[in-house]
Length: 300
Image 1: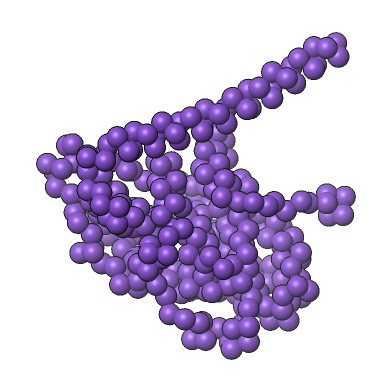
Image 2: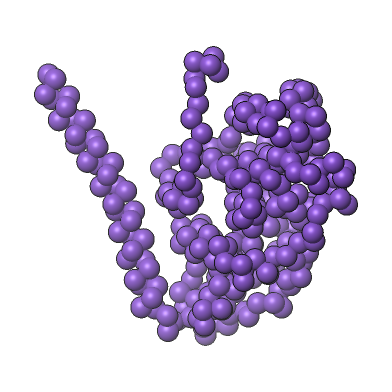
């Protein structure tokens, strides 16, 4: 019986290792194909809110800088903006153009024609290649220049926060309608507790009203606490990119703020999605060097 268990364990480990090898092989094949397809134009689709739009724009500008033939598909914005009702399962907001505060308008991008679409590589939203390409693009300072923000945040927060602060982004809003995985409040509270005493100030950003009980618990841990749950996306992005420590949600908005804040200590979730949609996590986690070890007995 013990022999059978050992064999089963060996098979399980082999399958896990083989799965990750398949992911690596797929990535290598994709990069080879991408290199071989340099003569074909690429069309980058733009959809979603600010985070998704930054990802698409970063890929577009990175390909432009590399001398690639690249175009933008902005047809998503032909529809007017509509904000989803929180709590209505499956209901998702349809966003307007969000990159104007960075000085980027639709005219900043070359639009694809129907003729080009017939022979182009289409980089759709949701394609795992977009995460790979965007994170690679956002490591380059030249790409950062397209998403410049003013220095400092004295126009948003009291001067005391200029000395450095911990920022925590809690993604809620319409995301609760469609998310396969949510980082729960207790996880954020536990992380805040770990930094209590190490930093004096904390800023909590959310796209839903922050519960009074959450505010009270977090406020008791820090000398200064600010809660921004009724602010625009650009202001939220600025605050996150000025933080010394940034705790992210499993969202593209968080991810882009982290990528555009290279001097911060950034914590990202290990799990981003539920079910079997885990390839995105491999892309993000491959750029991480440490994990937080939880002492479960101390937490119970």
